[in-house]
Image 1 (cartoon, rainbow, N blue to C red):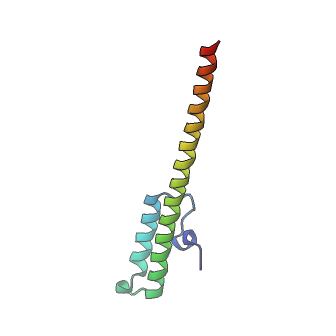
Image 2 (cartoon, rainbow, N blue to C red; image 1 turned 45 degrees about the vertical axis):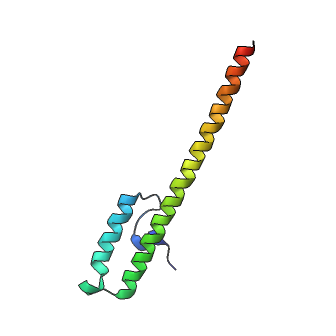
Image 3 (cartoon, one colour; image 1 turned 90 degrees about the vertical axis):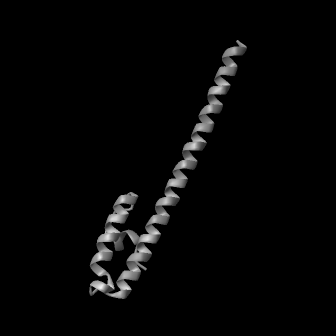
Length: 87
């Protein structure tokens, strides 16, 4: 199976708006009601779904790393303040 980004003609760093724009343009062009191929339409739909899922996973990972970083930073500040007050 081709990569979803290649199918949609976008970069892996594309945001949701870019994914939707590419999807709608391709779907309009390849829709069976417009004389397009049913198989192409299915392939585009699957690529869109996969690209959206990957984007969501990337956002969840970013949120996790930011939250973890904030917890670590908060812990370091707490330790620094505790050391400052004990002197």
